[in-house]
Image (tube, rainbow, N blue to C red; front, side):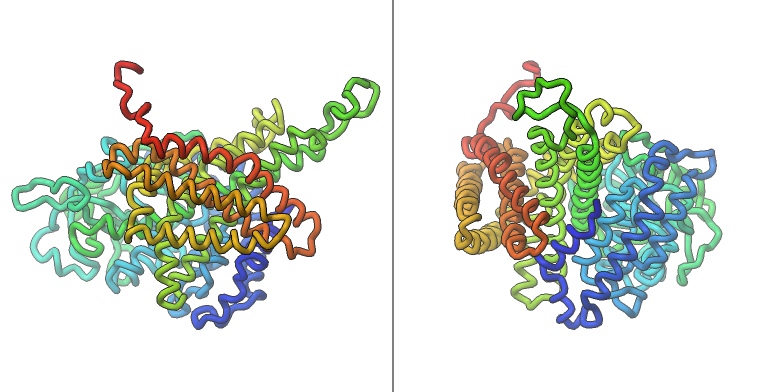
Length: 607
């Protein structure tokens, strides 16, 4: 079973991606060039990634005392990806990019995420470089970002600390000016950093010439004290190896040391590290402290880092989606070929009758349809968000601003929803395989292990829920929420005209109204403690409502499809979602609207 027909349908029949070539930035592109990019990425993923997914799971990164050792397959995949040009696909021609729409770039990267998310495909490197293109100086762009886009350097994001986790206001990594004239360094104001960073993906390896760490740290005040809260956080470029103003290695190692590798449940092919900055293992010019260059203004680091964090959250959503899709394809293939049992319709009592394939059993169809509804719906959501990115960057001013605000509201959903429900899809894929699914003879157990990370990194469900209910639906007087409601209602009005979809359109309208009412009820007292006690149920209900909208909109496009089996499958997945999933929102929103304090008020001793 191939992913390509689904990608083609969503890109062209649903999103009309080819119309982007009418815009000045994308005028050199066409359906032909988009297809060529997809063909190339599909081939590389098939040849360099998929065959080695199990290998990188079993041959985990190891530290030999000097360097981290990774399988040769990882080196080969990294090289092939860099040579494809995908690291800089969306960048300007002048710096070696393709000026490819982000919608197409996201679709192309889906092949790599499905083939082996553990090998990776440069998500953090591209995000790191994109941040520098937005907030860095011309020298920082030239020396660091362009070398990341070429694949010569790779990038990380260093936020969390062992004692702080996701609570960034509590970071204690310090950055002090590096001597006299520190502000005059051509690469930016130069500081010395000391501290520890935890959970740093791709924090140490030999895949590229250099690793460019983007590090959050605090600059002490005149009394040597750190400013409390996030307002005191600044952002720094801290290269693993020092470079000159032309980006050439100076031969000197920066004071960034690997303190340990984290041994994970999944994503074992990607190194995950604890890094020590400035401990003195690699003193620079005879002094301890990692050399770092300030990005942007002091105290404005978190605002800069959100550029990368939001991009990474959509990337995490896509990774979760494609792991779910990989499990769906594997379990569908298994169900079509595994004989077991006899039809219920005949009583199943004639032991002499031939066995049927398990796909003929209603409960197996239920599990397969659930997976399809979760994974294809999530893929549509991620590509819709990618389309909003293109609109934000190349649309007319009003449309661009609407896209920006819609993306703000949808980003917590784009990250959290696939990471929960495509993980559930992986669990169902194991269930379809029965006992075999729980063994390493089949790939579905690895897909589940790999996907379990996605509910955690780049912000847990709790963080995403508080971001959505505590900030995103309220910002700009609720304009983003209203924009989403307007687009949902537009889909509802179109679907009401189609007899086969009218009932679902009315159901979606009711769900949308319930979300609106619950949002107001949650904040009725104006007390964040009341409203946010049930932020995660709100996130879940909001996400299910968004996915129901996405599926109804996809169903409208599917109505016109000439591929009868695909049309039947998409309409079936839409009906499944409306009949089996959307009703769950009522229970979630009930506790939100009541501002239920069952969880928040229970004393610690009661546990």
